[in-house]
Length: 134
Image 1 (cartoon, rainbow, N blue to C red):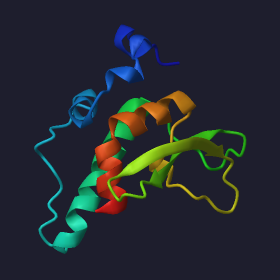
Image 2: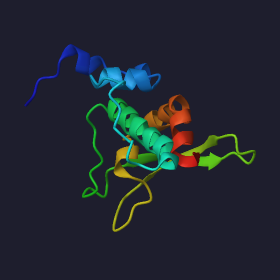
Image 3: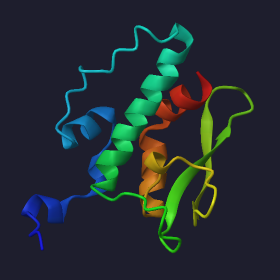
Image 4: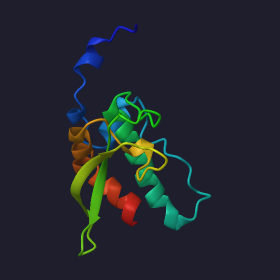
């Protein structure tokens, strides 16, 4: 059995306040972004939003991975609501699902607790907007 370090024991997901914190937590350089030069320009911003969201989820989940072979494992995801004024997205609620033969959320964009998904949505709202609306 792997022994946890003091840092691993004391990790608090709430310390991830933004994309830069997530990159730092994962020891990734935020300036080394994927090369999207061959992708149509209209897809670049949404793809960067998705990339930054995956980094954020990975950092906050701290090693937890959704296992879709385990029906009893709760997998929390954000359910955003597009603001009627078109100015962004609001967090309407979170939910968890037991994936069976379908899922309505990507496995990279879910967490193991409601608190984490609420935190992610609040702190990474701009990334959700890029991914969902740009």
